[in-house]
Image (cartoon, rainbow, N blue to C red):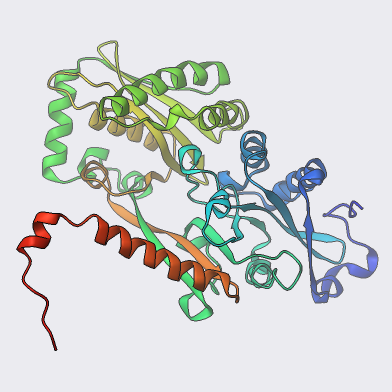
Length: 398
């Protein structure tokens, strides 16, 4: 049965009386998707600035392309008749291939097979700020509330967006990955040129590249038609590079590619994404897919030309795209998770992204861990070189 409008409360549930009511957990199945997304959009408007990856547009696009592949449910949290939080709960598909039957729930758009994965970062869920800790407490008691499962995973959250109670002391296992970014806000406030934010060798490399480039052009797409045109070229450049290195490239996945084409239709008109093309002397140097998230430009994916003589396509593309973001008022140019020399050269700061796992009590996960450890030990033993074994010293006998 559909609950009342999330933003309407009865007279008895207004003000202090409403705030004193306990939070109430509810799980809805995939068959109620349209009703839940309607509530989701209403709450989204009420909250204002939110992460791109927990918007209804992102979530519905993901469901359209992965919903038949990834089992999922929706979590809703109410205070009286007022909706306080809503989020997607997606079940990891690798659970089906496990030696021990497991159930892993991800908060948000995750759980796909590796070949299709969108690798969600700067993840979050819709929730009134004052209720975040309490809602998370409901999530980790969800097993007792009827959800069932072995573990709950928060994927790719910025550390500042994690509730205070996500700590090792509270039973969470935390994995941190560094995201490099250039602090454009500080550059803007200083009045200095962007190039001065980097080290000597990077400044020299940028200037040398720009001298070799001739006239440069940055195309910042703002319509789906323009974005699709640049996205087609991005895919071509991206795939050529990875295929040359013996890898399939992420756009070898039809689901992944179709998901991003739908995002173009939804996010570009809303000002939440752009596809940027950088040309030098009329030749495309590179294309970047950029998520525009709460004042940050997140470089999600890209493609660079392979043969460019003395020019460095990656350096040219990112520097000019970054300069465009600075001029458009964005506070950061963020390379997202994954470290590299290129990212460090063009960054001034880092921020940790966190993957957090909470394990519910039970016998399956300990047994799973033990079997996996045995399997890994056996694999290492079987992969040992016979020559190495022959030359190894005899084992000591105690």
